Length: 313
Image 1 (cartoon, one colour):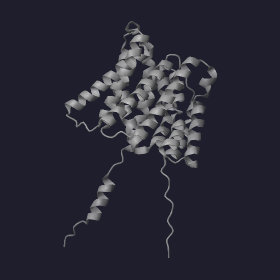
Image 2 (tube, rainbow, N blue to C red; image 1 turned 30 degrees about the vertical axis):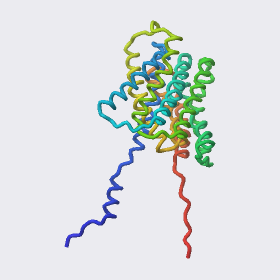
Image 3 (spheres, rainbow, N blue to C red; image 1 turned 60 degrees about the horizontal axis):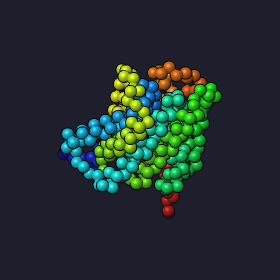
Image 4 (tube, helix red, strand yellow; image 1 turned 90 degrees about the horizontal axis):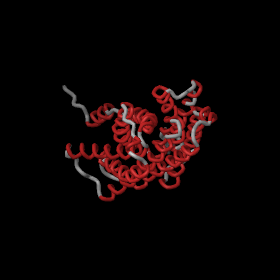
């Protein structure tokens, strides 16, 4: 007598076969976001920062929306959603990267990554205030460990004092912009395709930067080179298109505090890439800071354990 599988058994087998892609997306996002500091440092060496960004955002936006049109993707954004993504383009693209790239002219890629890695701390505080995210003792300990690890990693860089205070101020303003953009994304909660939304964000960022780019700098200051072309290609494809798409996805599925916690990994990864590509000095003892950083991320992102239910007899 043949036995047919029950619906419950079928459901269980489907659940077991489902593969969790979140760890892979995180593993892809962190190197992409970290390497963008190095690519940005290369780019601003041969091109004025704002011109570089205006071209980057505009091309990325055109590519995204052009691909959507060729694929005949359904436009499922309301006018409100489109307006929200445009506002995010000003915060996350024009202000965050405009101020950050201006700072990179006189700040090392490693220190730039350090400053922006404070994102999780400020995001966690604002998320608790405006988004209703719970600030538990475990999260506080995780955030503190992340700060300690980051500070340990780049301590010698701050002691050397080779970075410009002017550039540091621009980078701090850049940090404030990405924190604001992160909270706004969760607060305004735009619906619809993140792919099309990212295209709108890039177009809005490009339009916002363009007037300043051609007023404050000159096309004649661009030094054409293969390294500039390579950096620009990565910033458009790997940064503005793929990394930002992953970032918004992580914000949706992980929450503002948990997603931002992965920025604690940016200094060690950024310093590693800066060492390999730019030859920036790094010491082995600095990499030991990865230990508290990794532990801090685990504490911030680990789901809270469900309280055990007592059986009533």
